[in-house]
Image 1: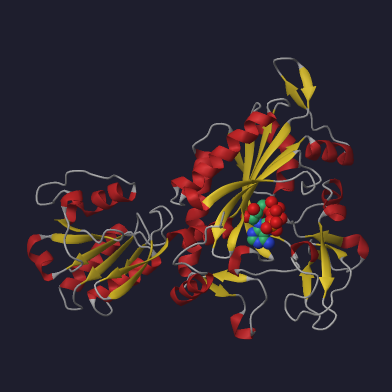
Image 2: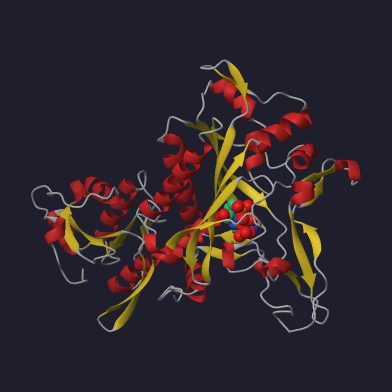
Amino acid sequence: MTERVPTKVNMEKIVSLCRRRGFIFPNSEIYGGLSSCWDYGPLGVELKHNIKQSWWRAMVQERDDMVGLDSSILMHPHVWTASGHLKGFVDPMVECKSCHLRWRGDDLSSVNCPSCGGELTEPRLFNLMFKTFMGPIEEEANIIYLRPETAQGIFVNFQNVVNTTRKRLPFGIAQIGKAFRNEITTGNFIFRSREFEQMEIEFFVKPGTDGEWFEYWLEERLNWYVKLGIKRENLKLRQHTKEELAHYAINCRDINYLFPMGWAELEGIANRGDFDLVQHANSSGKSLNYLDEETKEHIIPYIIEPSAGVDRSALAFLCDAYDEELDKDEIRVLLRLHPSLAPIKVAILPLSRREPLVKLAKQISADLRPHWMVSYDDAQSIGRRYRRQDEIGTPFCTTVDFQSLEDNQVTIRDRDSMNQIRIPISELKNTLQAKLEGEDLFVLPPGGKIWKEEKSPDSP
Ligand code: ATP
């Protein structure tokens, strides 16, 4: 069977759109850039914020079996000995004897250098953790590490959370935060970078129920992406073989996404057993047992870990939303982003820069700003302004025209269908709110029209 490849979208188009429109810039660009580090611009920061907020809302706020945490990036060095990272968080590195480029040995499909075809050295194990020093003296005893995952901050706070929240099994602790890995090979834009953000859950369950919970979380996490607009056919689960399982894992499956470069990991879901709590209990000498009130026995919970990347999610959401369609004689580029992820929810477009139209349009944007990210755009033709908003995924444009001054109505234009309706300004906020929340069909107040029946051309 041939592998499906993504159509329309390719990485060059995504990188160029992100850069051109202010989603993502190369880091330290004026100094020539810093390899594999990226800066999120005005739209990128909104997109990322919306992804994190959607995750937090679905995983923490809407559940009564989950609490949040924000632990420090720097941790006691013994954490990394106990977790196995000092010994085991390594990748085999090979170097090309001719061009001296370095590669991850287990990633290569050929025995020669992928860049110049030269001979490669034998693999050498390379620890991916970034080292730094705590305090002013740079000596061995002061070495600490930038965390390569947020998970360990959760394990070492397990007892604190149980004691302070009185949560009973099964329950989870969720955390979003930066992680750092000194990856040997990076690339594919923000897919693999050295500084990135993770959204991790450690879900503590009674041993024996871990198999069911593992299946539960696979389903739950897949659904999260689908609810936020990722096409189901672009997601698939990949089972880890026994040989590739990490040292701590009993079982692991990845949620893979069909990125422009092919299927690759978006999120990993692992059954970590009792490995982490046992390791930290042994290493710290502190009990990390849990008293099962039903049986009055002390047990060590098993842990199911859904671990997702914010940056990889952002890339997947962008790629999945990217679309091109023929509109009249032009190609219309648009991001069909889910309204909760769209950086700007509504754009206010006055048809002219003349007073008193501008005053009215500015007043409308000021009234909407407390509720959503709003963009005010009065430059160039209305058609071009619609295109600009389409390209950044703004779900709705509101056009203010001279007629608005007379009848106190404005036009709302829908990004995906390009349908337009005219409604009273007094109903604008409620109408947008309902549409942003995904309401499909509703009767607008007197003077308005029924959304779905309106099929007008893409003109103001
Ligand atoms: P890979 O095999 O692609 O390096 P991994 O299996 O090492 O990934 P995990 O340790 O399972 O990744 O990390 C959980 C999630 O964190 C990944 O699914 C991914 O979304 C994100 N992630 C991990 N490493 C990076 C990175 N270098 N850049 C961006 N995101 C990352």
